[in-house]
Length: 553
Image (cartoon, rainbow, N blue to C red; front, side, top):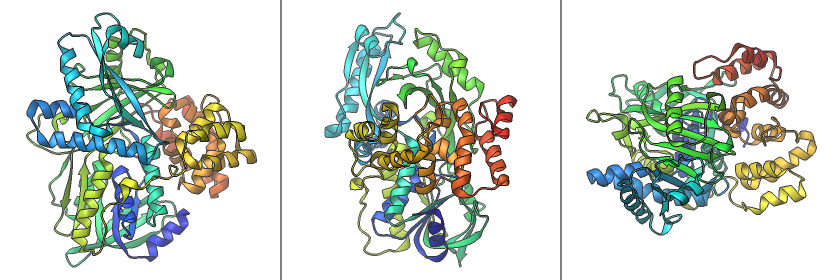
């Protein structure tokens, strides 16, 4: 459904649910409710996955570290969280096979005492996964560990443990959730900001919103409002009740992107404990190498940036565990993402806060769902909708249907689509693989657009096509350059310079499709430059000048 039609629907129809927030949780809630036959609206101030949900470590996992905490403290809640996440891991691999894949990970061990500890722990991880385990974990000799991950420092290596988790494209998964919800009858719309919560008496009845694209304000009526704004849930709760107590603390995940040569193409690395007890991952992702860690205490802000200190933290550990040198100039991109953690004043640091989710209902009826993690978005959505059904006193609502509802692009997906695009559409192999892995069974539609004269690459060393810009603007609610290059494609997350050089052509195509004037183009230049600001907070003036001038870098 086109964005204009969705906006009209928001204006005209009363809804059962109004979901505020278009990240993984909000989009998951919208899909769950829509597949149960409820009338659902969702508004997102920015774009789907514009915050935390596009800045994850790209793993669908049960949480090895959470399991360690569960064993040490015999914490049944943590055990349940790991078990549920492992169940969801298998489910997501089935619901979106084009966006997900199993990924083997090596944990290197440089201490003999660590070998039995991690072997037993990962066997417990396998056991909790049960029949849905991806593949059994196993011990690796030092020679085998180096064979699986040749970049490891050989000196002092005693062995390792190989285990399996899932990997995915988080932003495209998020966009797919929203699009699937719309196909099931919901009205999920990006770039719509909540200005005010509406009440009838002492109960919430809807929200006044503003379409940030047109500037128009209007009201949306709904029986139940769901606050799914991630790290910003307390801000919306204060809109409902200025005196409410905060629920959240936040930690950040810091990630950098390196060239593919720094990791094997199909094996990841888990460093279980760094100098301050955090976990570090090194993973192959979209033809590059992703390195990152989580649980750094952080302030809640939009579009957070990693500091140079954060990046050097990662470099210190690469130097400790790697036999090949990594230089600062090898960093192609860097980003930081916030994790909403349920606040516990007794916890000494964010690593010990619960990753489980909580649901809170205010006296006026605002249902807040927060906490959790990407892997368990579907369970969070089920619990939120179940509570909304009770709160709104809805009748004859069936249980959740999402365990068997494939996401957009999955229904007719098969690996053979890649070869079809190569043979029948004449696509280069890397482009065919990218299109099928990103769009699933919708990839042939983009190939058809490419055949009509839009088959040029946006950047010489990346598989993204001009045809994709047209497709995502027409079919995936992308209305800005950042929407296109950050969430529908992932170029801003992979290669900052390539994203900068792609800006003029993407802006030109969008201007033609969406009818932008020069003032809108200028705003796009400013917004894109701000989005790509370096960790120090400023783009180099030379690069900024090229973007502002509309030239290629």
